[in-house]
Length: 221
Ligand code: 0O2
Image (cartoon, rainbow, N blue to C red; front, side, top):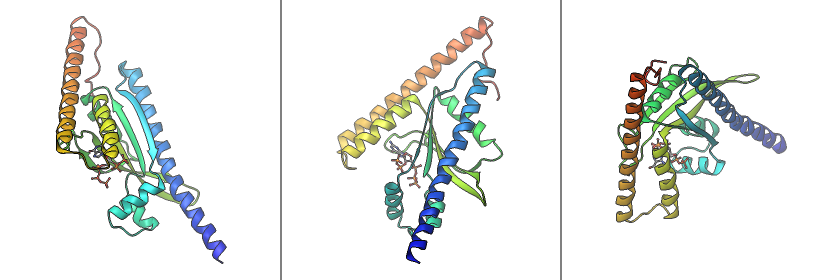
């Protein structure tokens, strides 16, 4: 009896994790389609790169404990919403909102939560647009609505966040105040770079437009 139970639990856990893999596959396909078709129509690629990951069982358990939640499948499914995570790195800030809009409009995507850390950065300087979405996964005997976290940011925001993540963990989650200030300064510099590059991009687009070249970046999708 004990063997049967363990087998059942194993099967359930495998199916549970598989659903998140499928969610990532679905969303990656959607992003691929958007990217290819957008580039074809607008002759412009707003996406620099896309990365996806499944949260490890250890970090899922760590998050469950940190939030003081019960450790069972339905509690994890409902409360840990970034088991499947996708990060889209865009060229410019305006691209972030365009990509978000294109995903939000898709009928099978339900936006459950939107955290705009670009309009309201975190106190440490962190910037990104987070969409917590649900996507249906059609399996042999059921449909599961799977939570996925989509983080959309520019290269400069990604550069800062990736390094801050490393530095933060290296210092075992306690950084001295002067380093916190320096990190915040670095975030401000990253932001200035984003603004400058976007301004140059806009100015060059206007020049091209004046020269009679078709400029499509700001067009409605
Ligand atoms: P990891 O290692 O990237 O997976 P939640 O705990 O997710 O239910 P919370 O904390 O309000 O709710 O979510 P939030 O703030 O939207 O953060 C979710 C994810 O955003 C984090 O996942 C990070 O990936 C990223 N993030 C948020 N704040 C920061 C920050 O200050 N610096 C960096 N580098 N990344 C950040 P995890 O699970 O915390 O970490």
